Length: 259
Image 1 (tube, rainbow, N blue to C red):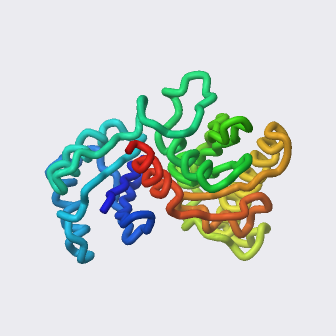
Image 2 (image 1 turned 120 degrees about the horizontal axis):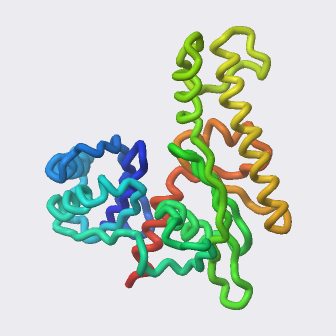
């Protein structure tokens, strides 16, 4: 079995693969103060409690955007499964050409998502990843060799970050759940805030995607992933697909490409 780990600012997402099949996934909070021993016990117990044998894990790969957590999780995986995980970073074979001015600045999760969609699509594609930050990543394809090309993208504050900033700065506004309200024109404060957050964010996404299309030569598939993708996609005019496990699948593909 392969263990794929996506370390984000808010959550650590783990996927257990048998071949190309994702057999189980787990989510735990990203805690910078958690020790390798604590992550070790947590990961081991997650597999055992779901009737998975830790000894069956014979490979591991991780992508991280939280350097303070990376080393602890690498050590934890080594202890829990007797496997040294492959860490996505410089020198890894991606099969994707990176056109960023400084490729080292591109987050590992963005590269992994590019790997996943370049494997699936034969033309231009945009990935919208709803996390702590919402990222827009543009992937093309070289005509000569069919290699995926990471073209760049955009980064904006995530919905939760935007909401927290609003609640902290506006003393009279209450904290609300981020959910679709009955209408755009809210008739109470909670619905008004929800309308601004949800429909305002949908407008942001669609507006940016259309501008991206303009620079990529026309409309192309848009794939969304991340926790709030299912909330935004039904209201969006540009997002046509939600893939909850896009990053985990990209990690699996990357691991296979190293052999």
